[in-house]
Structures are given as C-alpha cells and as structure tokens.
Length: 202
Image 1 (cartoon, rainbow, N blue to C red):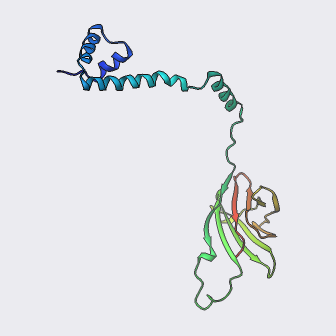
Image 2: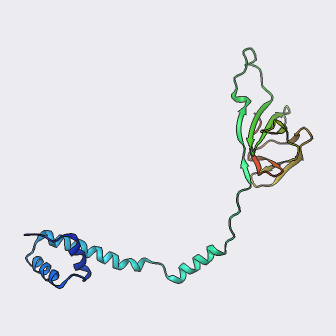
C-alpha cells in the first residue's frame, strides 16, 4: 500500500485538504496502518503546539510599555577615553650580570594611546606608603613633548586624588598614597582621555 507523504498530513490536520484526499486518508487510517497513524499523531501534536503558541505571547499593552521605556532612555554616549597600551615594563627586563642581587628602586613603564607616548617612573620613600611618580607625555608621531595636557589621579570610584599639568617639556610629577584601584588620566587637547591603571610601585 502506498503511504501518504508529509504534505497531505500537514494539510489534513489543519483541515485544508482536498475532499478526495481527506476521504482517502480517512479510509487508510481506518485500516489501522501504523505508519500513517504515527505520522498523523506527530502532525496533530505539532498543530496543537502551534495553536497554543499564542498563549505564550506577552500582552500587547505590556510590549508597548517596554518599548516606550527603551525609547525614553537617552542615547548612550560614545566612550571618550582610551585604555593605554603597555609597551615597556622595566621589571620585565632581565638585570645585568653583577647587579641582579641589588635592589631596583625605580620602576619604569611606557604606555601608548591616542597617538601619545607616556613615560612613567615610580619610586617609594623608605618606610613610607607614599609613592612619587615622574612622567613625560610625548607626541608619538613627531617625537616631541606634548605641552597641552592635564594629569589626574583618580580612584575606582572616579574620585579625584591628585591633579597637575605638564610643563613645556611635557613633564609632570605627582606624589600620592600608594594603594590599589588607582587610575592615571592624561587629558590632552583634541584627543580622548588616556586611562592607565596604576599598580602599587614594587
């Protein structure tokens, strides 16, 4: 006996089959054909699921309220800062033979970002929590000092800890209490703020 394909079963359970096809299918199902009975059962369950899908849709008024909520939120402002990229760390460099047992009391790191090179040297006073930072901001493309920059030190809560400006040579100096979650911000003219995470001087 030739069995029906999937399409006639899909039409049959939806009630859109041609009259002659419907009669033939009923006759075939009346014979107890297991393959056709299984196909009919599967398509009937699928139709029930499709019919019940509307019951899971949220109410239109709730959807409208959610859309209004998103529409009323201000557009997210573009990020106006750039994370500095570490290009040099003096502690990552091996010490020369003969001085490896000596204590290194100056730590130098160099960061780049927004076309600027930021050279930083850290030091700590003996038996003190205070650290001092000496830095210089340079124009990476022209290899000259960047004179129009403000230097700010802030904590993880964006609270200002210290602030200064660079001199004519792009140099600056800051003293601060060494602790975790500090950021150095270089605010240069016509550029995004360069953010550099400050680790406690070692």
